[in-house]
Length: 193
Image (tube, rainbow, N blue to C red):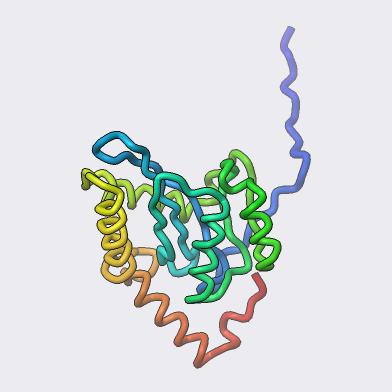
């Protein structure tokens, strides 16, 4: 006797998040781990603007708790304002109270859905490039050296590395052009996110 396959019904309708239509609407965050030459663990908090593909921060340390992440986000906000949303994975660092309190106070929505790395594709793509082009290329002897080399790579990534999705421009020139377009044509990006 054949068993009938059960039809799977989702409990909640799947909602497709709209693509950002301008800079600073949506960011993505994730962690990448590596090691120093003498065996200590190294953590990197990566923050990327989903529209411009700019790497806004690469915070490097041996430990990056929620309060430290909130300080990094405050530092970025001083330079360029806050996004409407930040996409993160369901890791323990992002599910903590410190980041939730910061997001609530700042009015930023955190998107966290367990088991959905595809929804954080911008940062996952960035993490692969970061690992291949920076972490795998260097043997870090100290935390100071790691911070210096990683920041130099971040600057090169933002200013020199072309992206096919940006018309073969680097993220910083693309962002500059997007900001100028918003200044001269403010209604072009007025679609609600």
